[in-house]
Image (cartoon, rainbow, N blue to C red; front, side, top):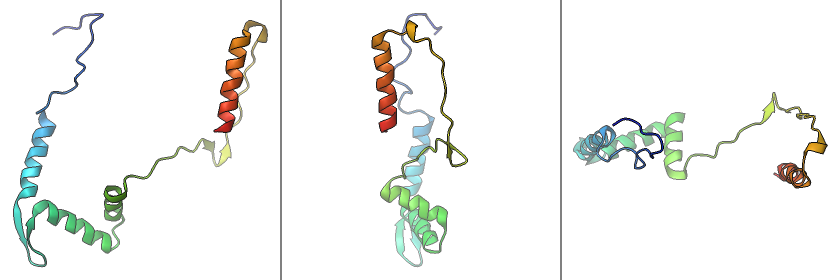
Length: 119
């Protein structure tokens, strides 16, 4: 169907049952299969997989430790360092003709600057 200007696109996104859901279905099926384990007896494949990850974490595998921590505690919040080599960025200087700014606009500019200093 060609694009028609002024009409909204498909808002629902991908339809359910796409290729990713099929892959998930296959992986769920495989993960639900029972397998025998000499050390722990019969268990589901996905349980055996997570057991292996846990065992790797216990041996010091940092990727496995991170994977388990992300699942149990949630991913750590990311921060953005707004500095250059550990130093604050240079302030930006802007030359403005104040006679062309309305008092309302000037008030809004000062409000934005004040809020930026507080955060």
